[in-house]
Image: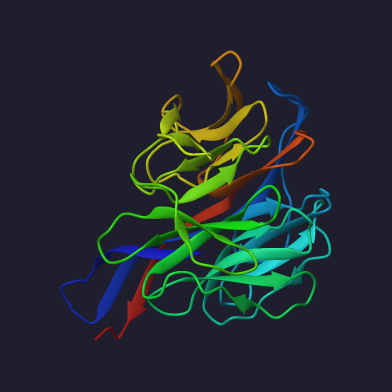
Length: 303
């Protein structure tokens, strides 16, 4: 991923000088000895070119789904949990992302941005044709997830300047039902099926509300606004990225029982988007800049 900035035109006027930063985001794996301690230093998983973001682990723990631009467009890819055997799952010629496995491991839900508005698709694994879900017409629909029993989709939706809200709809079809009232973009059900945990698009923190109905409560304040994909729920707590305790972001664990926050690992470079947890609680996947290059670029005969 390359970005240019700080352009300057010399007095002669036919040259352009600018600063270019080239970064490559990769999925990293951190193995844990227990909830509070890492087993060994993390390592980058996938050697292929291009950026990789927002990973999700399959229910059996054998595969990872993620988004990558290695062939130009952002599409959904899968690979083994050691980073081998990568396969392209979609070829949608746009921007696809936020891949989420179904509880039975047969399907992946994803968001796709063909032009201005985004929609939710479902694709069978491996090799299925992406199928558009009829969610909310004329709105941005994104950030899908599944209920624990696989019978419902959750997704975020907004029209115009309205804030994103979380909705849900039956997998077999039916009218969407609004879930949140005060904002929500990334939601996941608790393992016991009692609560929906979610983050908001701009407001910080992780929130929850009873699935049977009731008001929302803030569970965790320390997730920064704008970092809504960078947390992962377990039955015992929440792993998340924290940005305010050191020069670099840190992976931390919020323990439901003690309400304590435990530092796990400090990232060495800039984080990207996404965090996932294995079902057995032994591995965390997160996104980090693998390398960054800074260059001064010169364009001759600039007009």
